Image (cartoon, rainbow, N blue to C red; front, side, top):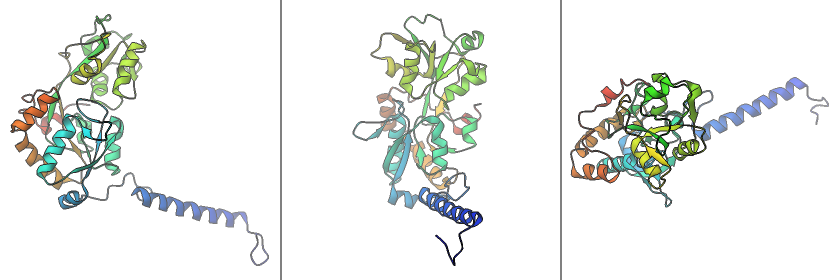
Length: 297
């Protein structure tokens, strides 16, 4: 096609194409809620009234008893159920739940793909620099999932540091991975897996000698499988405190949430909920977010 009898030049074609690409990019960014070149879609805080009208979208992990989504779509597990109970006191409902991996939770929160994370996410120093955590609602331990009889006699993190031949399965982005790396377990010893059950599959396939994960989750995963044992929590592993993660802009919501959470933790409803999912309701007493935010990792 020509205009005024002249064939368009390469520069003209390039200019048109660049303009089309720019327009497409702007449209795509608008649909995703991001500005061109922006690292996230954080548009600032939402008011509590807005959350009351719109509800809250929550990210969870497929990691019972901490969190999961059932076949009927219900978001459940200790962390989401605590969230639901506290939000109810604020007049807010959970409108939707998304299962995702731990390493995607904080980026997705910043990008506004969900409003909060309720997945038993452990509070630690590096995460406290990226999100706001509620006060701890769950305190628990970690352990090793090993073949029955524990043939490699893995009982501590120090065993993994001392024996460089040991392979340990971990979920990427989790507190457990950070603990092992901090202790001196090398990257070559770590076998990363996609989801909680894949850690046991890695051990069963002999790609890993052990799977380092939360104690209660391991016990639930192996409860019907006699080919695995769960070790006692290693004495050299830290106690983990978990809470709900909020965007750094949601200070109003966090303040209101913490006020109601502290009241809720003093009720029999909280005690019964913790026992239902296998957690010790007494373990959380005296544990604070400020303390947990000093935990390396």
